[in-house]
Length: 597
Image 1 (cartoon, rainbow, N blue to C red):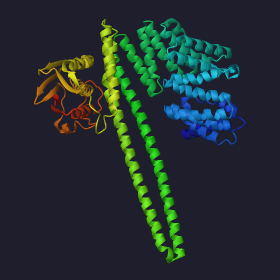
Image 2: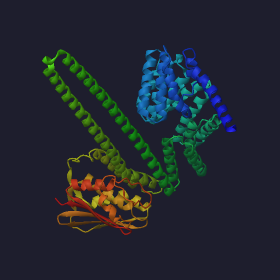
Image 3: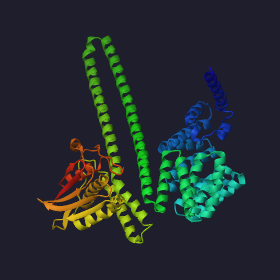
Image 4: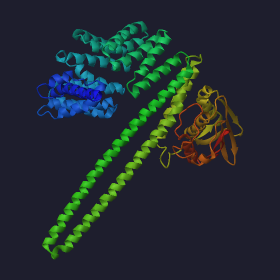
């Protein structure tokens, strides 16, 4: 009984709390409601669509109609669906302009600018902001919003490498905020000013601004803005040499991250911190966690887009079905009319029925064709995203490790060249991979390849990764031939996938042998690891796309079942083959054979 009474009291409390809010949604109190409603509180996201529906129901109120689109945009933004959010914000901007609501037009502009800045489209954001900051009548504009525009302009100039202009804009923003006593706005500005001071290595000044922000945001329990300040404080303390305190603040930022993207950024900052103080093992582990989370974010976005495409197809299919139903009804009417006219028109009626039947058959074929095409497109998109994710992992992991090494080794110029080589390899991969899932990959670019140089580049790319696991790479060249005519980029790509697999599935502190020899008119590249091996029952599916065996990488590296599939495809395209021998608990030997032309 006590529990039931408690529930009744809670229901009544919620009723009386929510009733005044809904009562505000009318033409008389709309303006006041817009000023006071907690739009930007992510904890209220479940209520936003309800508010949007209530605003749509207010008659003869263009402003209420416009704000319903803004609320729908905010809901999509909270779900990190930025393209959909932009669409709603643009509609909000259009309606605000048409109704002459300048203040609402500024709000819509601010919403769009926020997404542009978040997605690093700084030139687009700057163009929108200058439309207001360069107006001759800007003194008549909403000063609080204008100060935000100056602040965002500072962010744009800062990221466009125009620091003097950034400082000027921050100064104008701060001047307005002080004049109107905008405490929240001043806190936002201090975040940006702290970031600017950190770039100039003025850590003591940045520390005072950020600590003031943290105290203020803790007092008002604003966890979202607090996250940015925790990240900044970690960087500031790191710059001041207070490493333990820096680590503590970065871990607080990780614990308080309110979305997957924020958690991924916190992990990335923490990895950079560990790398900076020489804790490379922790830096590597944290970086792997960051990359895994980033892959999840990308996959979720892709799945959502596929769901949207599927729903769009279903809607079109429903329209076609309605059209078919309409045609059938019309056909029935024609038959009834023909019956009344008598036998004289019976042959004409048969002709009409036959025409409609053939037309319906054509529509059914069209529906089936569209269905098959959509499924094929969705499959190709999934496969392309997977190939992109797989083939970019090796070059950019190498870039990360070489950059870490530059902090502790004097030969910075040599390492910088290695980083550049890895980056160029990644960019070439992007240019080629868009055709990997077609029946014909591309027109081969046949050149003479220096085999010694090819193997040297392969060693330089994977040496840091192997060293992390204590693995020795042993290269042996048996044949007399010094060069081969083939496509260098594709051959390098196949060899990289095979060596990457050998390292992943080798036990730490072991040896991976890379051996080349010429046999029966083919140049053979042999990769031998001393890893876990592959069970015989699973070997027949090894070269299938997305094939995943029960064997896992020995140091929890990522594997998506694409490396061997891609290597075999490239080998076939080059006129060769990929074979292997594997025994459980002994290791595997993969041999790529390329014809000598």
